[in-house]
Length: 171
Image (cartoon, rainbow, N blue to C red):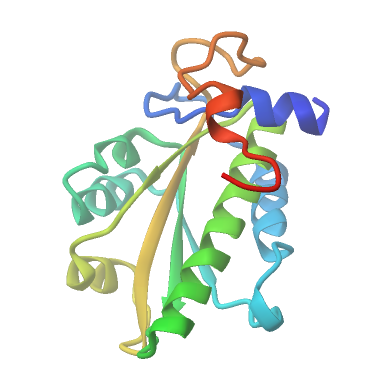
C-alpha cells in the first residue's frame, strides 16, 4: 500500500480476527515506532510487546475503555519516564503521539488494524509488565486484522470538513 493510501485506510479497529501477526510484520511496526521523531532526539519510550492471550486479558483491565486489548493479536505498551516539569511532560506526550501514529500507519500499510487505549491503573500495568518505578505506562496500541471490513482507503469519513479545519495565514 502507498503511504497516502495507508493514511486514508487507517482507522481505529477494536474487533480482530484470530489470525496471528507475523514476527516480521510486528518487527516492522516496532521499528517504525523506534524511528519516530522526538524532541531533541530523546526517544523517551520503551515498547513492551504483549501477545500471550492471558496477559492481553489482564492488560485490558488497566482502563475501562481498553476491552479490545483482550482480543488483539498483539498490543504494544508505551512506557515512558516520569517527568516533573510541564514542558518535559508535554514533549514526552507529543513524542509518544508521533511514535504511536507512525506505528498505526505502518500497521495499516500491512493490512493490520490498530486501536489505541489510555491507561488508568498504573499499579496493575507495572505488576503485569515489570517496568521500573521511574517510568509509567502511557498508552496501549492493540493490533490485529480487522474482524469486519479490511483496511481500504475510506471515501466517507466522519471528519469535520476540510474548509472548517484548515485556516491559511490566520484563523
